[in-house]
Amino acid sequence: MAIGKIRGFLIPFVTLFAILGVAAVLIGYGKGYRLDIGNNRLKSTGLILATSDPIGAQIYINGILRTATNNSVNVDPGWYTVRITREGFIPWEKQVRVQGEVVARADAFLFPTNPSLSPLTSTGIIKPLLSPDGTKIAYIVPFPAMKDTTAAFTPSAAEVKNAGIWVYELADRPLGLNRDPKHIASFDSTSDLDKMTMIWSPDASQLLVTDALSVRLYQGNRLDEYKIISASYESVLKEWQDDTNAKDRAKLAAFKPPIIDMATMSAKIIAFSPDETKLLYEATASATIPQVTTPALLGTNPTKEERTIIPGKLYVYDSRE
Image (cartoon, rainbow, N blue to C red; front, side, top):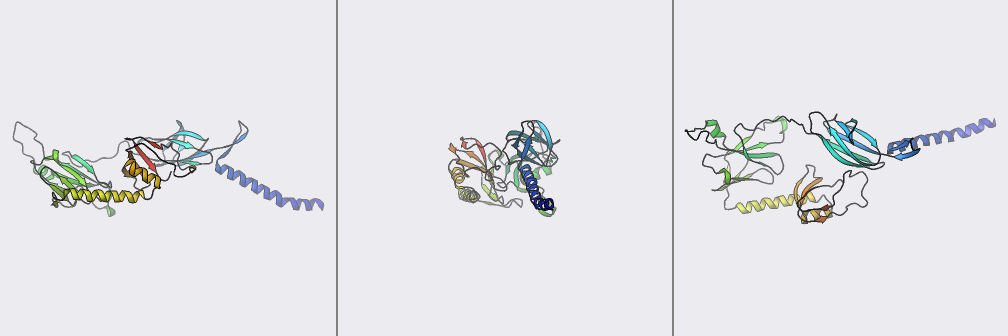
């Protein structure tokens, strides 16, 4: 009877301790703790989470093939060279810092080595100009050049018709609508292309074209639909620059004050990432970027930081790190 009472009394406690012990082991394993049998100790490890687009790429860590994307690899704390490769795509490589109990991400977007390309024109183009939002490109199809200087040259009707300024939309349009290049400006053999310049409006809806004779503002949709603005040229450019500066200030508002001060006083903004979380800039003066979050958050920045910027060099600031 006494043994039965003792057994009945101990079973709940043994069960509770067993559950707590298993839970502690699982939690420790999930945090990255591993048993180092060779050194008879429990060590902390980190995790490299590697993803790629497209998936199924090989993951090399310090030159050793470990697994394929999308997947994770347990490693000891330290610096590692992560290389993600797939046949037919340009390899991706990055130095990643791994800390104990922390996940370090390596997200790769792989570009084809031989992309499928199609020519915009068979006669050649000059002076391509990308729009500020990256959705359009304007280019000039020159008037057919003299093919034989010793004989009379008569260009074909198609070559004459195609000469001018064209706009091609790079972004896919909804419902599969046609995005063939649009002819917006025509000219002839007397046009001086060497002195011709093009400037996009901040919203990419208008194209400013200047040459030796006039300044024309095209709407970017119909052939030869423009306004002569030679008299108001400077004011239009100033208005566009003010609009661009206002948009940049609105995007910068999402960043911390020290970064805003640096971007406005010691750097020239080149571009924001599509999701507006990263800033590409060129340093115009020497400066030291202060630590925004002290202490730094673990696992948010697996790459080496450069907080002392040098004039003339390009840098990327990631607000998430």
